[in-house]
Image (cartoon, rainbow, N blue to C red; front, side, top):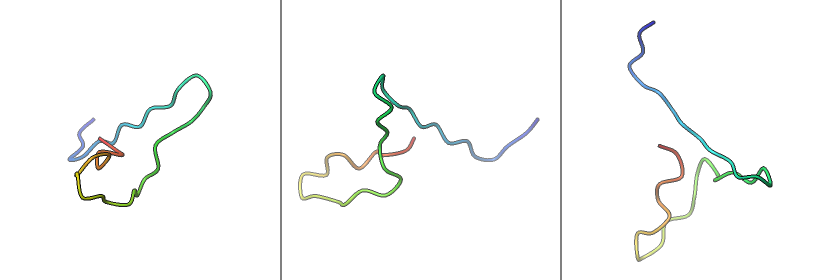
Length: 35
C-alpha cells in the first residue's frame, strides 16, 4: 500500500469527536481538529 496522505481522528469513551472544521480564535488554540 502507498498513500500520499493519511488522516487520524480520535474519540473518547463517550464517543465525542473533534469536528472536521473548527472556528479559529485569536489565541490560535484548538486549530488542530484533525491530524
